[in-house]
Amino acid sequence: MSTTYRGMPSTDFGPKVGTVATAIINAVGSGYHVADVLTFTDPYGAGSGATAVVTSIGASGTVTGITLLTLGSNYATGTALATTVAPSGGSGCTVNITVTGYADAANVLDSDLAIVAYGATSAIALREGTVMVGLGQSGIINYTLGTPIAGLPSAGGDDGRMLAIICLTGYAHTITTGSSVINGNKHVLTFSTPFLGGSAILMAYAGTWWLMAVNLCSATS
View 1 (cartoon, one colour):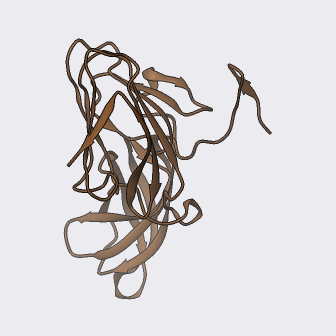
View 2 (spheres, one colour):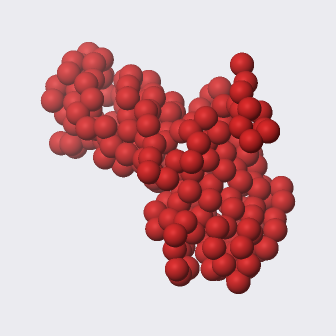
């Protein structure tokens, strides 16, 4: 089912970022103990602070039960997220999570269309939809964008996801990724000054952001 928004069809634009709502065991690992605390990692580097306590274990210290402790922020729904453990000892436990809400809720312009405006918040956590940068800023902001996950969305990957980034101010804001993550040989997008409305359309495939179109924006290595 679709609805209209300013003349455009609405659809599901992929994972929304926010706090962890549910967590289940994906891989059981080994060497764990009851009461160990697992911290969920985020392949994008944006999510942080979500933890769970080990409530039951099996043979060889495999994790058979967990309960959420803290919900964290800036996570996206995903599968097979790696974990770290305290105290140290166990290894190999991964989790599947779902999330609720947005980490940057005050600046969500439309949750159905996944349109988020970022001001001074520098880490772009949205994987798909429309990102507006420079909201309310009077100077250059250096934003970061995580590396897309290789693989189909049905398997927890990002292949085929489209992300539009639009500059709301006339400053030379930058978007920085990991080395060679843009087009396989670049990692910085810079918007042109003093113009408004610079934009970059990116598609994720095989762990790389591929530029589909740019306007008043350049990509450099």
